[in-house]
Length: 282
Image (tube, rainbow, N blue to C red):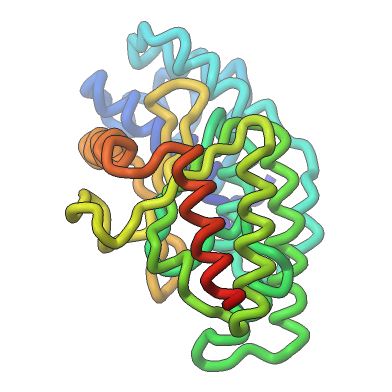
């Protein structure tokens, strides 16, 4: 098969883990190519996600690398065996690839934790609120692109029924009036309904809480089948950025823990959000 032109973040991650495994063993690409009976360009393609790898060859790669982490190898085998079509495939070419990568990350995660300081997290947005957020991008999007991105965001929300989801939402995001007060009022009401759903935990961070780690970023932490496959997505003006180095992951795990200590409890958060909504009505 010809090399992939644009591998997804998940495909790239598989390749990154293969490279880590090889480098940890002190093997050169040439040595790995010899061990697998292939050539160096093929090793490069597998390590950058442009070429797939079979389960048998992945096991051979792990053996050559003397990798004893059976859980990680099993998780990587599951990744390479997954060649199904998913709902987001129908949006290819219609929305930016980074947005599709987020949906793919969410689907394959074991659990999701997000910290937002400027707007309601995407999985909790109403369609009116999402449309208002997209309408404020600069340069402005054509109306049909706003509608397509909104539909994609709403479709992503099906993942809330599949796995645990925790959202830390700063008061600034709870008060930001994308689309005006009526849209925000409906959004806050929807947020209260979502907070009662099984597996969904919404925790507010009031203005009067001391500065907390990560307060200047929007962080999305997705746990993998094994800790080595955890990933963090950060919002940048150029699009989503994905982080997965061991040191960075440990830092963001610490941020999650400290944020949990600062935020209101789920029960306190519901009362807090309800009060904001009540004041908005007035």
